[in-house]
Image (cartoon, rainbow, N blue to C red; front, side, top):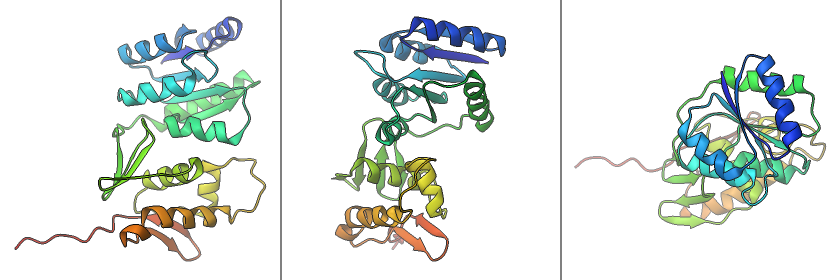
Length: 230
């Protein structure tokens, strides 16, 4: 297995290199965001370990550019920031998982193994459900040709549902993927954000793509009226 480590701390990068090599990974290391984008474009890595705090081009920018280039290696983000907004931003940019510093190497290895087991299905550059589209690289959401302005949380909820079109996702599913494992607020916040989304993606267009499935959760479907040939 071939891993790219992108970490500006020379000491931590070397620690990760040694630890991963002991786990039988082939390891490339860079301390530069610009070089990371180039390496990810040149090499088909099995997984990328990406620090957020890199300097001029941070981990968010690296992740966004890697995904815009349609490189789909799983990305595990490392961050010293424990704010939920930063984690959501990383996932919105196209990361697959995150790990907050300081961390145990054993947890890092376990998360990498989980990402590798999950595999690497080809992902489209733009996610679409009917005429509703979301571009993870630019953060742009459209209904047809009309751009939609969403908050960070609204975007994260919508992207999660759009990646599971036609599937019912429970409130706890949405909380786990959009908020945080340690979230201890009112779980009905999901219902609030579903309402916000309906006001932006459905009601102005006379649509009903975002459904509430009683006692089960929420589902996003293609609700375009089918056209029939004359």
